[in-house]
Length: 493
Image (cartoon, rainbow, N blue to C red; front, top):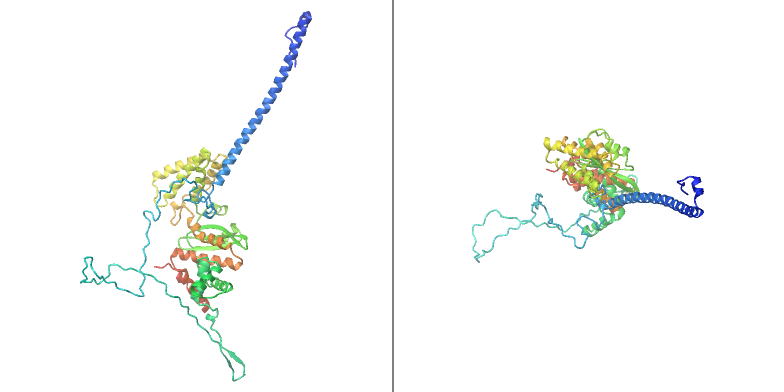
């Protein structure tokens, strides 16, 4: 590109040829330079665009890496993952560095912990230990006090001797028709195992969650009872039928309570995914295995119950049209995860939420005064409103909390409601452990057994009653063709 000459053509013609040649050479050089500059500008623009793209992609990748690192660091303490999913190398208390300092906390019970003293049982034998000699060497002692100053208790297990009863069956001839008539076993003794031994087998298999092989080993090595795995299974099947009325009664009681804590966890039947549900309160726990984790399953669980629901924020529960307390512990763990993020704004938002949620939970024991409540609401709502329009994880979390805002502090107004769903989570924990040990069940009747025995186990644990005694009574009445004694579910004392 040659620039336009700054003079007229006539003046150019009057210019000497040598000057014109030199000027034309300069014009060509300037044109080449201008063309090179133009190409350089184009290349610079392309490079700048590419640099901008690279920087944008770099920012996206950095954000993605930060999100993946946050996901990688998820554990049961900062997310809704179960404790069993935590890595054994990062369990609480595990030193991840060779020079990690030991914990400042002392082992054992902490201040305020209610101690457990050995209970004095009724003695089967009593041995009086009289003083023999004084420290001075004198053996002449008088005025023995009538009452002991201390009782040392020793508990022993006597040699276990089984009651083995043989029912000898005879045959006789009928004088009238000549037929052979056989003696018959009484119906209540036909199973071959009495109610107490049957209850022990059911207790080990269901309440303790031992495998059939382990139950077989215990019976053989401790009691000297040889029994097949099939024999154990038959006892378990009878136990399931025996406690069915107990299971139904627990369900009725749970479904008539004003407050219910609900949770669910995966279960497997022949390696096919199902769901173990629990409906728990301060008096009982009821369990149900369903093929789905759905509205249909939830409605089957609660039937016609219409009380106050305590749950996590799964969509099925969020559709509950009556009073509901959402589990603040879930939000605390999520806030903790945010507080650990590399992004300073996310971390600050997470720390602030963590502080406010912890303060809210503390009011379950010490109710706030008007000033504390107003200050909390101002801070809390201000944080949420300032983050709700963000397009990152903080905005998503803020919008979720705002959608659940009316479910955060029901526990401050309704008796029997707690700020977390820990009651249901603790109740369902034995089911999780059973699933991990046994890998689930193998049949429909296996599902029914798990439902019933977990309901019995957890309800007896809450009420401090003996599940073994209830099993013994259930077998006694099953063998006699009678319903079990439901009064045994009443809390002891």
